Length: 283
Image 1 (cartoon, one colour):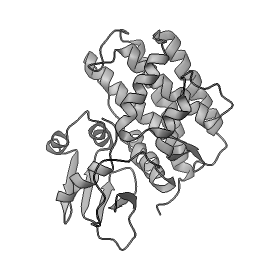
Image 2 (image 1 turned 120 degrees about the vertical axis):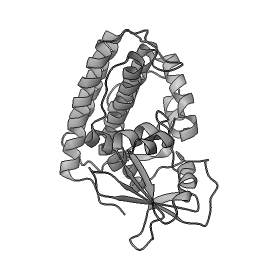
Image 3 (image 1 turned 120 degrees about the horizontal axis):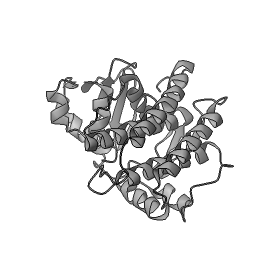
Image 4 (image 1 turned 45 degrees about the horizontal axis):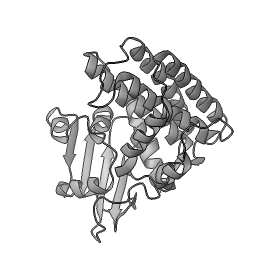
């Protein structure tokens, strides 16, 4: 099993969440609410989505906090898989109708502030229930929200022709604390579907300049940390921001490779697509 979250990592995650919230808010404040960020979402829609996540996470960290007003929320959240996250987002945006950026940004800052205050004196490995019955450590919850701010900030920046660098250390938190955290504590039915189970073991090692290498193994339909004696099949050296954009469908793997921000090597690199069909994120 991979090492648990260190004090330094925990401090980094909370600082990143505070910093990226304000950076994201500054970008939003400089754009028109009707700017189309994706084919379906305006800036106001995208902002409502991010706010809904921050609100949900504040509630998950502190069940005494007023929950997001979405009918059947708990039923939806327990049944979600990677392939149905988009449907859940649609349900939320139909019921959470606020679209005034001033109101939404005030809500975002309040929810992030409550989440950070709730986490302040707690163990970063303490888990909360998440989508599909997954268990996410508090550090992973913060890391996931950092990634949402970075990814959707990227969408808005592309739509408006602005620069939006993805800081490597902050972007690396998604793999280091969130993805590793749900593997360590259990991802429930979140990864149901995808590649059919196989007796073939696939070991993939992830490397970037900001974290210790992470080795994951797919075997019989389950992803776990690879044992020390398992031979690595695929190595992925990557820029964290590019890796996250690729995982969420903003950048193709071909483009990531051609720009030199992702390098795939190892003794059996052709096994990577089979691994990715199982261990995947919404795109």
